[in-house]
Length: 309
Image (cartoon, rainbow, N blue to C red; front, top):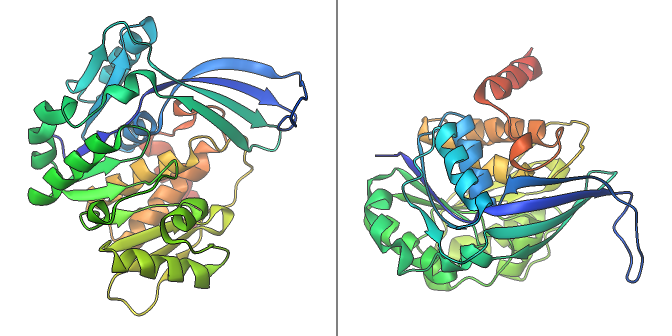
């Protein structure tokens, strides 16, 4: 039995560094091209494993060499890969990523094998979800599979954590079974209609999500940190992040989510888990790539010890 089940996407990230994002019709000379393991689900699962969680990963890959190799790689990381399905005659999902010299990124996705992670496909994995403490999901796979997993988890008293990225419409019925939601400013606005520009608007957006049934809202505010709001509490609070020199922000949000749930499973308070996740995310942006940038538990603890010294 794994204490954390992650359901989500697996991508081959084609990464190119560019001086700035190209304007329409503009051709740029890039450099440092690389193909790196990615996908929001895979990134979060890897982050959790490296931070010390016991993880089972529900995903779908192609029968190409990338899909075969990545499944083996995740097993070597210590992940339960028995629920990673291999789709015949289908490529593994891809992401085309441009990273500027300032560390910002632009991403275009093609789901490919990820599109096969449907409600029907995950039926055999429902027992894993029911036996887990937490279920962590994102929005790069079919909504029918996400909803089926969430409803089953709620019925089994498994905590449901949803990182609603990339931004997409969510049904009110789904939100009623989400225990923790972790949008960024853009995703929070998409879900609530409220432009999140400061802590007051972050709380207003949180209140809308609380009204829809979500118990804990964490809105990531970039360099400012995370706005934490708990249903029933009078006011939320801003939990600052750590200042580092960013090289590549591709995996920051995914690293945060994987580390966050790891902390919660270990019994950390919300504040402690968010701070632990901030540290992991801060370390991730100092390195290039998605999973190549995700730190180990030892590195996160060393970083926190240095910050506390």
